[in-house]
Length: 332
Image (cartoon, rainbow, N blue to C red):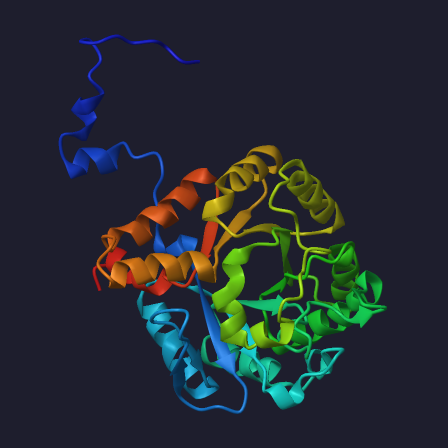
C-alpha cells in the first residue's frame, strides 16, 4: 500500500547522497550470473573473423571458440548460447544438416562440454542457419509448413541433447513444437534436458546483424517471417503464446527482442512467475556499440540497457555485451 509522504519530512534525495547508499537501497541488481554470452561457431574454419555489422563480435572456429569460452568463464559468466554458421555447400531446402548426428555443431558441443563440463550450454533449435532459403522451417506450397517442420525440429533437438546441450532452445515459433519436443526428450531418456522456449519472438527488424553473422540474410532476401513470428503490434498474443508453451512443458521462456519489448517482459513475468529470459538481440547491441565507439554515447549506456531489461523482469539476459559487461562488474 502506497503511503503519501510530504516534503520536508520526506526527502528522497537523502538516499542518493553517495554511491554506497544508492547501491544499498537499489531495487534491481545485475550480476555475472544473470548474463549469457552468445557465440558463433563456424563450420570448416580455424581462428576468428569479424562480423562487420556487429562491432567486436566474431565468428569462431572450434579451436578459437575454446579460447573464447575460457575468457568468458574468467569474466565470471557461466552460461553460453552457441549458434552455428553453416558452410553454404551444406545448406538445402530442408535443412538436412540439422539432423545429421555427426554435424559440426553437435561435434562442437561435445568438444566444449568435455573441456568445460560445468558450463551451461544452450543450443539453438531452428532451421534457418541450415536452409538455402533462410527460413526457420521447410517450405511447402510457398509456405513454411508448421507440422513438417516440427518433425525435423524433434530430431534436431534429440541430436543436440545427445551431444551434451544442457538447454534446448527452440527459436522457430512453430505451433505445438514444445509439447512434441518435450515428449521426444522424455521418451528418449533426456528427462533432465531443459527446454528454453522462445515463446514470444517478434517479427522484428532488429535481427539483421545476426542474420549476417550466421549467413542467412542473403538466403532470406526480402522474404518475411511474419507468418510464424509474432506481430510487433500484439501484447495479449504474447501471453497466449507463453501460456501454451508452459502447458506443453517449457521450463523457461524467452522474449526476443528485449529493450523494445520491456512491457512484454514485465507482463510475462508478472502473469506467469516462471523463469523468464530476454535476448538483447544483434540490432540492439550493434546500434549501442556503434554509438559508443563513435563517441556519441557514454560506454555506460550498455550497462544501463541491461539493467533496464533486468528491471522489467528478466531473470537472465542473452547479450553480445555479456562478457564485456561482466568484466567491468568484476573489475577485470
